[in-house]
Length: 182
Image (cartoon, rainbow, N blue to C red; front, side, top):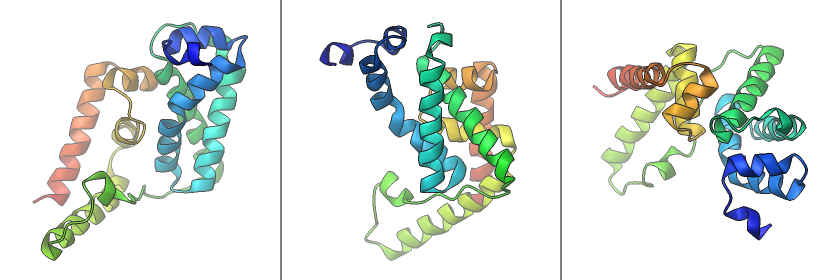
């Protein structure tokens, strides 16, 4: 498996058609990002774990369909996106995407109560306002910040131009800033 560790995803995907060790390296590289994305879409650990497993199972079953064109992560997140959409269609859940444990992501707790209160208020606002974003803007944010994909990869997943994706992310952030940071 050590020989696989330095290989590019596209090369590993080609080898993974016949070699499960190569797929294991791909799994280890991408499982955390896929899980974060699925968790952001479901807000439930069990559902996120199930969707992550379904994503990688589908990737393994369909690895021969990956042609090596474009980024492997974008192909994988396309599968994750469809699995999450299927999940929501099945459960017909109408909910917002709460943000948890954001203090760690933005630098931990502040020792100043005023700063902590302001940050908490802003995060609560962002969490509430996510429900009011258009589905495309919300999806672009999920893929960018929870999935960790580049704008080019998001464009591949969403089947849009890179400029359109940049605009979706920019406008989503602008909407949140306008409503929560004033």
